[in-house]
Image (tube, rainbow over all chains, first blue to last red; front, side, top):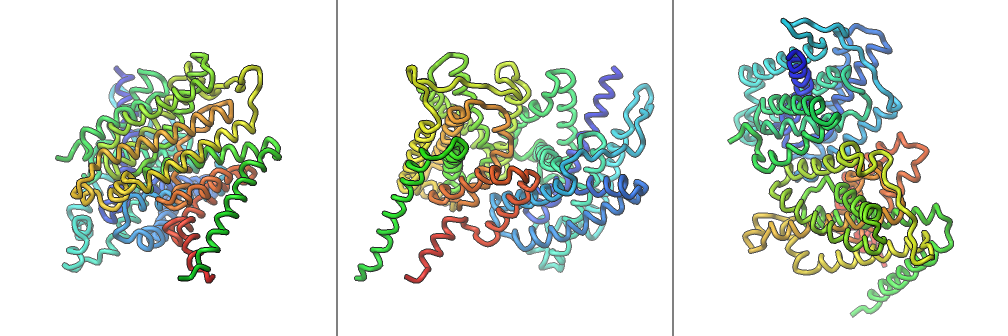
Length: 287
Length: 318
């Protein structure tokens, strides 16, 4: 019983990260109409920046995270200008956007690979390794931390989206860009800001999952694919669909690896994904 | 009438054919094993890229999982040879036929999806095949160690690398001519219409499902053929050949050559397939160089190498 409860927590923790990546993907998609394959690389960039700040400069975790976010935001602004605004301004086909962002992902991942020599970036969990006691179950602290952080991020996203002017502008631009401009929304600024914010959130996701996996410069693409699946599963146009989709995938992967063939978690996910894609191509939450 | 404008082109073609014969038929017989190996892998690369070009370039659909068909073809022929003890020349047509059937079934399932979802679905296919080979079905497929095949014999005579190259070359030429023929036929025009606008094509009376399925089958069969030829060429197959990156290289080849241009594929495949060989010392830089190359092609020659080159030649003063 305790094992199952712990597995549920672990699956949820991993799933939350996939959900975060998927959520940022759908934010970028709704505001720019671009599926950004390079989204995973911003998670890697976050890990790289955090690793450098903590292990080389020996800074405190919160200060390292701040520095990381500044780095990610500045790279994100350049990316937004070079790739999304200059290259993919409205009208490019899905095929072109996928290939262009894939190329950008190659360049980013390759550069980070050269900088780190494709080594394992070992990051210590912030709350150490001693399990937290929650009633009768004991959970590894990093998973609990991930779930709590995801909850806070989701709440923040909801508040920004529904309660602020910026959120309203974001929704308006996602709904219809031209109409939004007609009523006085500075659409290019709104897009740039939401894209850079999504990169920052992806970086936080990367930093959170880094202690649990073998983090290296090539971790971006696999992470992105999981996030993409999470977003599709929950419905890519649904604001919180990705989080639910991510948790479903996380639980499936964890339980399949544990109770079926070891190491088969990913395969099970992919095999289950195909029928879902074909029966409900718009995700489980959309009508 | 200006007959002088016809002549240079005529000479150009004769020179091209002679250079082609010398480079592709005579030269390999003088080269050592390593360079012959390079010729062989480029030939296989050309078939892969030609196949994807049909689906992606001519028909305008997204396919991220060409590596899956490549893998299926290779493992099918290897299993037929090892488990059933068939001779390569008997296993070859059987494996090819199975590839056609598998592509037809996969196409029926996957092409219910469109655009973004098709991209994800095909990527999923690539992952399923890769993970099956790599980790799940270790006992039958050898896992990391792969499968080793006996050398190819005809009677008591061993057929060497040069024969393999001519065999691959024959298939490359056959595939190229077939693609060229298809492109200019009724089917090719239907594909072009679908690429430009699916609903318009449907309104003109073109059966979109039928023709995209057909393009998918050709794409899968070409990739399967490339996989079968790989078992002949390398005598060893393992999951290393069929990583997710393989599908990405093929995609990169199609983009570099120019989507929808058959001649472009003949240039692009050697570029993409030789790059890892040239960069073997600088493996770390492989990704950045590929990325920058693709980015430059996309930024400055959106149509790809061959269309840009032939534009230059056409515009050049005579």
